Image 1: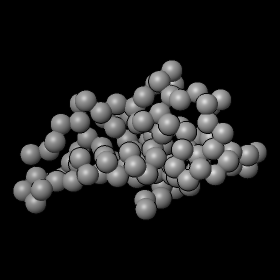
Image 2: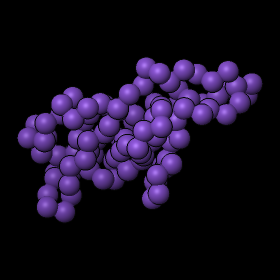
Image 3: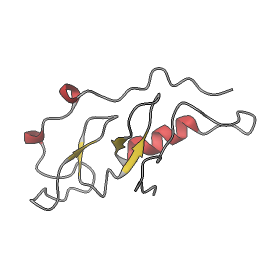
Length: 102
């Protein structure tokens, strides 16, 4: 059987960490600059550089949302079917054009 994904939702902008609270990427600690921009993970709301948040997921037919590596890995762990489970249909990890799974 497919695991239920009804409880998984993207955070709304008002639930994101405000930009002014982070001067560097939450994961790699590289400082943000004109060229290294801030990006919010749609699942945890933290702020990351592009390199640390370049995965995309679709949840319950939403538009693809940017996710950090940790949230992406956690989601894949949650979704990984047992051999008897078959294919999951609620989330399409890495489904956006240009998505880079690492």
